[in-house]
Image 1: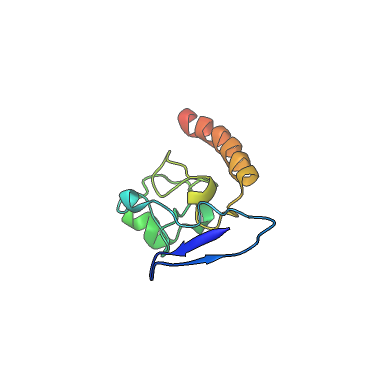
Image 2 (image 1 turned 90 degrees about the vertical axis):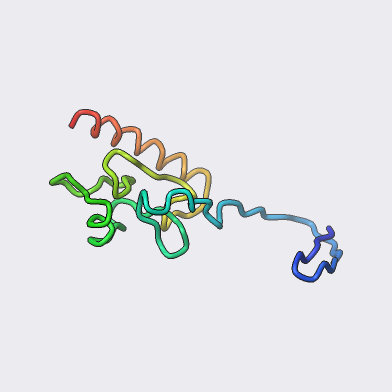
Length: 110
């Protein structure tokens, strides 16, 4: 395998038997800044990871606390790689999405 260092344009070639690809390690959430609370690395804070100042900044209007995958804005959920503290695995993201479907139904009944 050959890879190039973008900083100095050097290349290195190595014999490699296996590759583990990691995607989602850097969130693409700048467009959410000012809309939902983000952590210091740009991942979306949800549920019990939301701090009092996050809820204050988004003017949380409800008497209840945010649900498990709910952001600081009622009815907006974040799951998978974009969520602060996620394990960055597809199976986990699918499970979080399944949980959120039930919570969305709960929000719609409120």
